[in-house]
Each structure stands twice: as structure tokens, then as C-alpha cells.
Image (cartoon, rainbow, N blue to C red; front, top):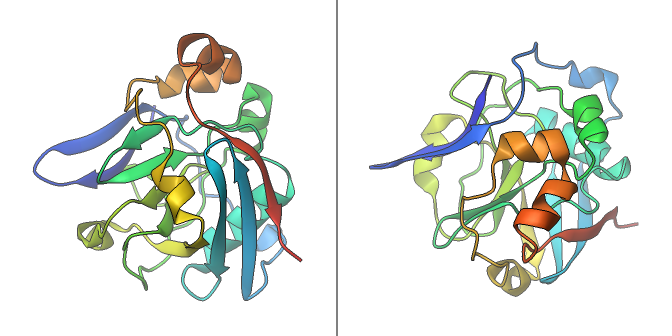
Length: 203
């Protein structure tokens, strides 16, 4: 099984089980994203907007665009919140949806830095392991740049909402349990988690 990680500093920040190893998906089979587009996240912590630049990370931007269009992130919980580091989300509330959409994609070269508000796909230590999970940097985490973490967008409004996301559960939610049981597990075991009500591509 893969383990999703985002960052190795003095202390490794490793999240539990993510998904079975598989070949990276060919993003050319997905709809190509516009050069620039915005996604409105209506969350329980408040609204925020992510502006995506395809030139920063084409594979990541295309994958994110298709996930949002499919409604993948609707009802997804912010299951990993590390103050002064990042907030991570992107496991579907419905296990069947996660299984259907959870293919990994090919890496992108890192062109932008993991600064405050920048948005990046989570990954394992293995190449081409980005899938559906993304994180938003709470601060300048540029040390991630050398570890293949390629930002594809940034929060352009509503970062105050991102800062308010409930951090009480920290890194306690088990990713394997989320994938197997979805929101049934999270609502029962971590009912105070903030979540995305709906993610919409702005016209």
C-alpha cells in the first residue's frame, strides 16, 4: 500500500495508507483545463477561491479540473490539519467515488514554490504518485519544492477561511478507514471536522 506524505523535515510528516500502487494515469485522456481558471470552495469554515495556472503544473491542473467538474470534492472533509504547516483534503466521502477516481497521475516539474496559500497535490515518496489529495500551505513551506511537490494554484481570496479550518483532530483520522468507509467513518468518529460543501468552477 502507498503512504501519502507531504514533507520531510526534521520530523517526517507521513500520513497513513492511501491507495494501492498503480500506473500513473494518462492525463491526455482527460479534458484539458483552461490556461487559468478559478474554483470556488463553499466550505463549513467559510468560502475561499483557488486560482489555477495550468502552466505551473499541467498534469496536476488538468486532473484537478476534471475532479472538480465531476463533483469529487463535494462533501470531502479536511481530514489532516497541521497548524503552521498545511491543511490536507481530497478523499471522497463516498468510497465508490474514491475507487473510481483515485488513479495516480504523472509528476510535473516544480515551477512555483510552496508559499503560503499555494495549493499542491499530496504524494508518496514514489514518483508519479499524485492522486486526489491536495493541501494548502499555511505558511512558506519552500523546503517541499525539492521533494517534487509542484503547486498548481493558489488561494486568491478567503485565506482567512482556510486559517479557520478546525484543527482539533490534527492528523488522527485514519486515511485507510476514510477510503474504506468514507464520511460514515468521519461523521461518527470526527464529527467536528470542517468540510467542503461544494466546489465549483467559476464562469
